[in-house]
Image 1 (tube, rainbow, N blue to C red):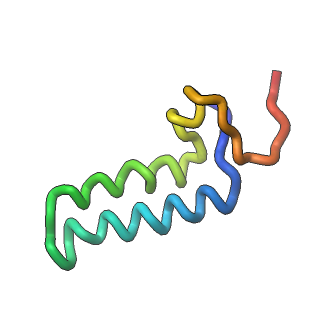
Image 2 (image 1 turned 120 degrees about the horizontal axis):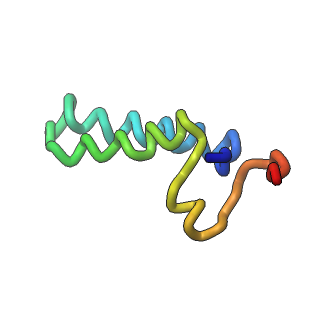
Image 3 (image 1 turned 30 degrees about the horizontal axis):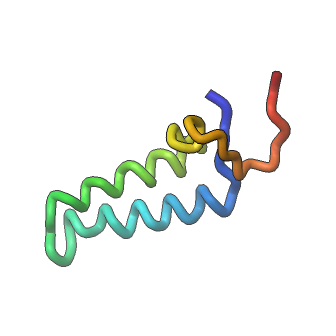
Length: 65
C-alpha cells in the first residue's frame, strides 16, 4: 500500500489516537478508549484505508505508477 497521509495529517492522528487511548487508562477508564488504536496505527503507518476507498490523498509525494 502507498502512503496517502501527509505529515500534518499523520501528526494529528497520532496525537488524537494517544489522547483517545489514554481514556482506557486514565479518567473514565472506558473500553471505548481502545478505539484510539485506529488513528494511532494509521498515523504511524501513513496509510488510511478509508482514504484509499474514497480516493483522498494528503501526502504531497507523487503517486507511483
